[in-house]
Image 1 (spheres, rainbow, N blue to C red):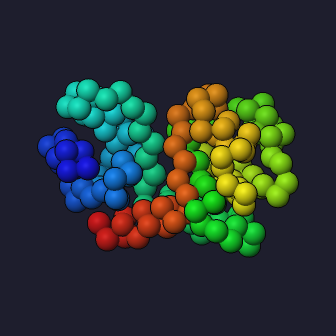
Image 2 (spheres, helix red, strand yellow; image 1 turned 180 degrees about the horizontal axis):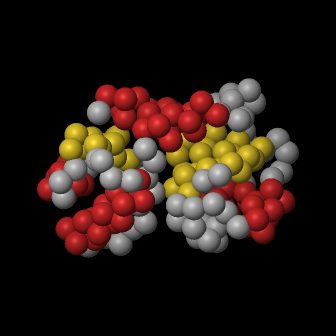
Length: 159
């Protein structure tokens, strides 16, 4: 994480902070999230030799994700409540395929560029989780549990 912070600071971003050893970063930029994502991808590849998709949300976008919390009344364990952040919206066929993989008591809400998924029995045997974690979504995606999502918002508020 110190190396990642250094790369992004050297790239001109300000207030670069990381969350644990997760690869999650909060930083200050006047650029649009898409531009920040592209710049981060380029700088990470150039400096670290790692070719990775970067998904960015502004502080306000992240706050809307937390406020929306469509499964908050049923998701009682934040470690089993996941939000997948997408680089774009899902194709309707992909969204339908995900909904077809839900096995009770799992729940799923696809909302714009986020997917909220409740896995009360864990993710180990979940076909839904396997699909969410795979590369078959047609867009770049990264998932975080609810504890991490709310911690990232708090980190963004401190930047």
